[in-house]
Image 1 (cartoon, rainbow, N blue to C red):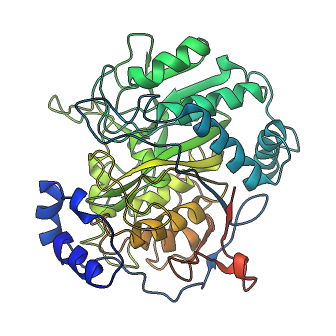
Image 2 (image 1 turned 180 degrees about the vertical axis):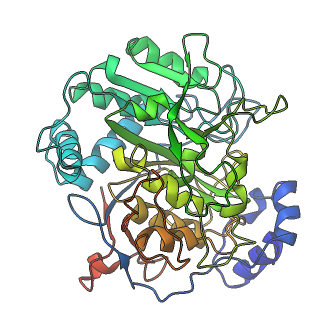
Length: 448
């Protein structure tokens, strides 16, 4: 079914509003004609699988503020990334609210303290919090940034929420010199670097080439990735950045997008910007920071449920998911494609408006499950087709996944256990999970 036909059906059902402003880009119309069927989860709603994680297990905190994003959509007149289009005060407040809702803390400092302490306790490092000298890596999704001066109509992390994140970390006691913000395969744009560097010159920014105040990201050739399917190209010869392996903690700061190959691109796929291979050839524009060898394993149109997915290896690697204290979805804007610019949504609570949301969790599977439900209910997200939640089943049941593969991404004798809890909400209107309903030990979606 094409996006045009889907929207016609939705309009006839009385569920769509103001469609005249949402003419699909040409790539969407072309891709939709050849795509698999529109995604719909195969298992019953509110049937959790896996083991919930977090201070409040399975909790995902969601803050929606329709005043935060107010870009007029005119790319010629200015970009969504400018302060006049995205409110920095509201973005800062949304992050503070979401973290307190996630942790149950009364103050910002207490929220961050709980996150660091819980991470250390979970990893057998005692009850201590962050200590000066411990590196904290922040992984952004800058997929649309092709140079430092990128004007940025394609969607990446909003500068407003990014500076709010680093500011709150510093206010909570993290030394700026211990913060590393990176995307290995792309560029940190001026819209993010300039305001952050002006306020916190000690923060280290790393991207593919470095220069202009940024540092060039370096691979750690002593830390290979091993894939659950050993036939995956460069099995044991895919490496992580030193900024990730040297960090004690990581924050996975992703964005809310559909994706033409994976169906969705959220926190898990954010780490496609964290993988390196040697000898990718002189024609490789990414200079080794190229995840194309993993594309086949994430194709939701070609790979059915119950098959191997490399996203699980990234989610479970001890230097990636194993160090992550916070999963953050910058959803002030959303995009229907990994390379597309933001589009307004049709579905509540953002009816013909920007998504204007922030989602946070300590459970990597739970936050992706909630985001998949949101994207699956949104008619304009036409790339959400095929076996979209296959990787969530694999991750939730990693110790005995439906595919039957053995996920041990560090290459050691210890295969992964459940990476978190997965389920689908009861419906797009009520948006309730089993912990909301008091019927099970799955996800809890709370408003900040």
